[in-house]
Each structure stands twice: as C-alpha cells, then as structure tokens.
Length: 362
Length: 126
Image (cartoon, chains in turn orange, yellow):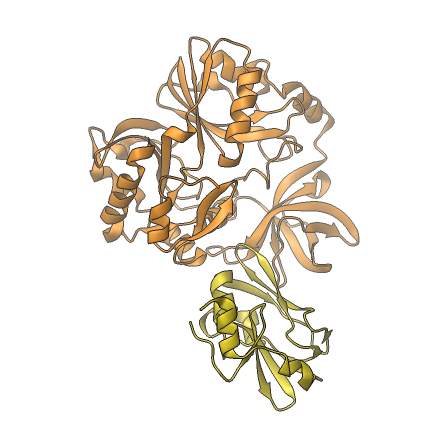
C-alpha cells in the first residue's frame, strides 16, 4: 500500500489508518464528529498528499486541455483555477479535476488519488497535440487548511504576498513557513480555506509548523471520515459515488462545467445527444423523515417501484440529519417529492431537498 | 480498556450479562472504539427471535453500518430505547447505559460456551 510523506505523523497523532484507493490514510484522529465540527467552527488540517498532480506544458497545452477536459480552459487566466472533468467518449466521468493555469503554456491538473495513473495514461494516449504531459504525483505533498479561521491562521505566515487578497479559485506561488508552496483558495469542505501543494520532502516540516501555529486557532488534524461528511453536506460529488465512467456527466450534476459551445472535446457528442433527448435521471438531495440511515447501494422507491439509486448517504454532524445524494428519475426530481429509501429491505420515509445541505454564511 | 469480569464475551466483541433467565447484550469497549462515534442504532423489534450468531441489530457510524451478532439464541424481550435519542451511549458507557437488548428463552449450555473476560482479553491479544 502507498504512504504519503505524512504517514509517520499520522501514527504519532493517533490517526486510525485505513486503506483508501490503494493508500494507507487516516480515517480519523480524535473522531469523525469532533473533527467535522472543528472544521465548521474553527480550522482543520487534512493530508491530501494522495491526490495526483499532472503537468501539461507546451505551446499547445491549452489546445490539448480543451480537447481532453469538458470545461472551457480558454476562460482561465494566469493564477486562476477551474473545476473540470475528464470524460470518456460516452460522456462518463473518468475523473473530476482542478486545472491551474500558470501560463498559456503551463497547466497543473490536480486529480483523484485512485485515478492518477489511469488519468495520466488516458491523457497521454488521447492528447491530440505535441503538448507534454507529466505525472508529478510522487513529487508533491498536499495539505488542505479548511475552516472559518483558516485565513486568519495563514495570512501572517506567508512571505511576500497578501494571502487575504487571494480570491476563491485563484492560486499563488509563495513561501510559507520556509517552504516554497503553491497556495490555492479551494477546498472540499464547504468552508473557506486553501489547499497547499508542497514538495514531498518539505511536507512533514510544513504539517508540523501548521499544527504548531494553528494551536491558538484551535486547529485539529482531520481524517478522511470528516472530509467525506463535510463534502457531503456541501454536496460536492465524489468519484465512485456521484461520479463514474458509466454515469454521464449531465446525470451527475456536472452540467454547469460541460461547455458545449467551446468546440469539440471528448464526450461532447454523447452528452449533446443526451441533452437533446433529456436526461432520464438526475442527481438530487434527499433527507430521511424517519429514523435510519441510507447509504450508497440502497435505493429510492415510490410505492413498490424503484425510482432511484443512492450515491452517498449518512447522518452528518452539522446538519444533523440522515441525508444523502441519489440518482432519481427526472420526473420526480423536484424538491418536496415524497419517496422512501429502502434500507435492508425496510422502507424509510424520505423527501427530495435542494442541494447543498449546508452553505456557510459569508 | 476495560472488560468487566462479571460479563461474558464473544469473539465478535459482544458482551452478555445474566439477569436471572434474561441475558442483557451489548458491544465491548474494544468494539465501540473500532466503530467510532455511533450515529444510529437500528434496534431489533420486540419479540424477534434471533439465532446464535444471527444478526441482532445494526449499529451505524458516519462511515459505515455494522452488524451486531446475537451472542445467544433467544427472543428479544426488551430494547434500549435510550439509544434512539443518543446512540453515543454505546461509545461512552458500553457496559451500562449503552446496553442494546435483553434476550429471553436462552440456553444455559450456550451461556457456558461464552468467553470469560480473561479469555476475551487473550482473544484480543491484550
């Protein structure tokens, strides 16, 4: 199993290690619930070094990415980041990614841990240009600092730039606590904060210093358990749950990043046909109205008829309800529709709700 | 970790306390620590008959649902309603307020086959 540069730190901090996407990662330290709440109320530190990093460089880098990803790369300027996806010809989602533009000839792709090698091979084999594609996943560690106090903690620690001026989905190359870093105002929790790329051999040092400086802000190291419940409340999709190669991007709620008018790209034709025909099912939010928890693999039913498949679900700490996201027949996909979730053969009353479940107050 | 000597145990990390002809059942401190913070307990129906090692109920953390196996064959004579409002009772007080169900119609032969606290500790390698 693969280990991040912070493996020994996790053990030292009492992290409970589990297998995730071929990586040995902490699912929790103090507990999923206290870690989740700490991110909502103060600040949390996540090791996301298992995420992959892929460089795309050369005069034709933008043209390559226009073909290989579904969002409009031409809309980016230097120092901006964009949520996008790598689709297959059927419009299914090979991976959801963030693209960072350093210059017109240099882009960084942040991809999911479980998909990094597959993405790299796909991008390399489908690249229609002479742009160079390099898998740099081993070279970087990544630390996410998330929560309402994240910027308060970080701004004084950054040298040579005013981090407080960094807008959402923008990034900057700077120096943080003695390490050269890329800091992006992005995240996967629904809170303010950043994701920091740092060279693998500097990751431990930065992690320790952030914990030390964060102590007075109430920082806690947080595991994958809290990361999952936080992203679910914020209704961010997760590959293998809401996203997959057999689920067209338009069914997964990714319509807003599929830019049909930017020119041709892989998956465009299939999605355009689907759009004209109408999607048979949509990703919706649901809440249970009776005791229980519905999870991935459970179904939604209308009377005795199965009308939906649950992609993610649990009882989450902040919203404090049993909730989830599901693929539901499109004609039933409006809020307030009454349904049931079928869990271990038992029907539990539920209803459709708008997404997200949680939105932070600005 | 605590494993009271007056209780009996299973290798699946349930405990049993005998109250006359009735067996009170819960999960051990080791089990609750492995499961993490519980957020829901799918309690068994009163009167349900359970087989030895059959599924008694399901306990759920934010991450996963896990079966609790019945340490004995019997009939569910009572359930801990307090767990509906506060599943964390199992995490905080697994051997007292965190009990799950009471079984009647149990076999003393089966009871004799359960592990002692020392045997359970050995099973855990502690």
